[in-house]
Length: 340
Ligand SMILES: Cc1ncc(COP(=O)(O)O)c(C=O)c1O
Image (cartoon, rainbow, N blue to C red):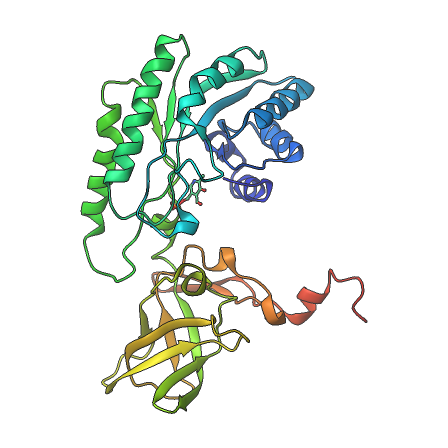
């Protein structure tokens, strides 16, 4: 997890799950650190020397010992969108792997910190396995040095990052096998527990954004389907140039056409697809935007004072509303200058 809010979600789901939580992020506040200590999380992934001091001070205040790993930056490029690549020296994450031994020595001097492992997370939506293996080789070298230095290294946290295939092709079972090999091969003879922080690969394919076609529109030869969802509901196409598959909800024979699928927001960046070949659909019909389960609702906003969507859980034949559609009143409730 990467925030106090995410910890609260874990605790509400199951308090006992706190002992599986690792806390990453470059800007943990003292308040968040204290909540995590009280909850009894497994590991703090430290991302700077200043943060280490704060974790130690919070642990001292609560008279607890914080279990820590340094999140190291292996300086390995990941072939993904630059905004979600995190393992290069120029990125804000982790500490340079070359400086890690000294930082471990400093952490070991505190009686409120227990050195317990190493952590790495080189980015998200990574579909090639070589960067994972390269990062793990560097981590394995570091673990060997740290063991020699006398530290007890119980955990290697390999982070998240495993990408999904947004085009819908390929066998995910084979991808998982290759991923497991890439992570574990370099660690083979080290007696460490491997921690994983998968996000997208679990929940991405589980989510579909359903949207209604409001208008068909033509500007000269250019065709648009204007739908009632927008970049505030799913920002991945606008932010990361992501290409999600889009299907008509009603599967029927129709002539293909080349069209953009756009939302109502006042920005040309508000699109779900550009120059996409889709079966011709009519105004009023529903479209399904696939693989919206990861970084869809979590990145949704109220831009243009648009209410966030409802969420419906489909489990076999059972259908359950698990988050009601947000109202304008919900949005205005916390605004103190709005006339009641
Ligand atoms: C530290 C950390 N771990 C895990 C994840 C989850 O990554 P993914 O969704 O690629 O599996 C993220 C996502 O940003 C992260 O920052």
